[in-house]
Image (cartoon, rainbow, N blue to C red; front, side):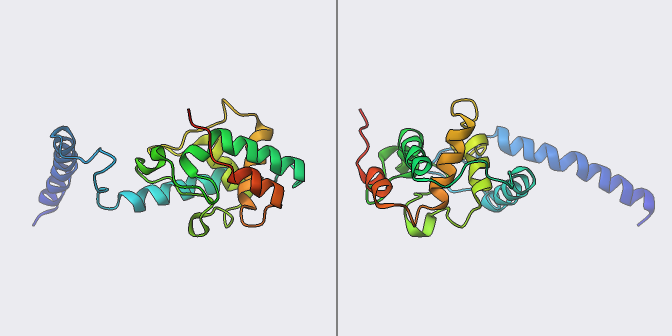
Length: 175
């Protein structure tokens, strides 16, 4: 095969592959319902992209101290803005959370806690949200202090003071 044939084949592949992908997307066969299974490699590619971006941009210093007051304020923020999707300790998963895709992690269930994440990583997720996951960014609706308070709360979810834990365990009033 000549170099000319290889170059022509390469150019043809650069044109045909995107056209086939476009035809697949436009055909209506791409699963978009929350009940549909993910595309091959969807979870892995999204995970790689999310980890790389957060690692590049997350804050490395925490401007808010771990105090009883900040943990209690973080619990208030969490109950008002996060619990409907991410749950509360010893409370059943909400109906809203059950219908999400991808599933929202229930942050007070041991295997899904974000206590292994740095406070800066949790802050980045709360502030910016995560595209195509249902996780909104709260940068425009919560103050920087509130974002740090809820991030501190979640980083210590498995070792909270009893009064903060009790506050979180109260059922949500979803009217």
